[in-house]
Length: 406
Image (cartoon, rainbow, N blue to C red; front, side):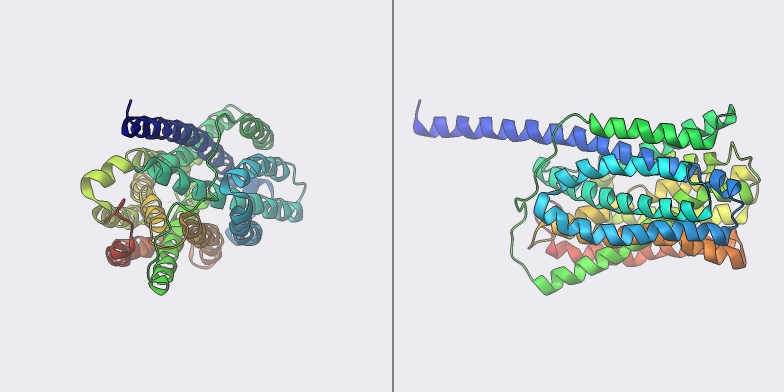
């Protein structure tokens, strides 16, 4: 055997080993996203329950949501720094254990003050897990050299809709919301502890091209702003869709979580089909259609009080939001110059700030103008994504690596 043949065989074996490690990391990270979605879905589905338990108005409930923001504002930038030292793989494993535990604290809160404290803890761990798993997602996607971000985000959405549907069915049969939240917390901690597979270490720079640093930073800010708008809309739907279905649509306490479930189910389906859709239509076209569906779906829900029309609108919103974040995160992770993990950490932090800031802002506006008028902000968000978002991605195309172009 010649030296050239030996070299080729060695490279082939090395590539096979990398592929196996990448696939194992993909499945492990998919399960982490599922745990992440199940935990947050439990919170979102049971918001009407503790709103009724503590007799909270829309404005008062916003203080609880604001407590969650305060915790996340502390943890997200800190997590970005810790990822640089320890890697997103380690940080994601730790956060996957801590995040579900906070559900138990929320369930056992004896009063309004303790509920706010528990919400702060929930936000701390949510911010840590959100930044960690999305940074790891770009690492895995770059290692596999093909789109998989939509699938990861789909697992998160699947977790949300599964939690909502399960809890809605159990409450319909008389189960106590507090005990359901405790049970979900214990089960998800166990799932995170026994998670199979090994994530990828991302201390090695996957993108080392040197480019125009000033231009790159400008695009990071633009992508962060768009992520803020996109996740602002998602956050509003996660925390207020069930409340909207109950207050505006007149649904019962047991069936109100179906408002969230409809949104989350359509978002999950859209994300699992997202990689295929982007390949066929291109990210610019998909981003434009997504923004229009988002704006149109909320407009439908604002027009009609009957709950079937509201659920129809929420289905359109879920479909519209499904691929916005995967596209934006994919662009951020492939900007030339610098480290892909650093890019996605910055954009994720700004995006999840919008995710956390949206619900309390809607609550404060709803206290003055009512929920339907407050949801007009989500319509504006969809229009911005369909117009400004497309323009930014088109311009950013020249700053991307060759593995991904709009």
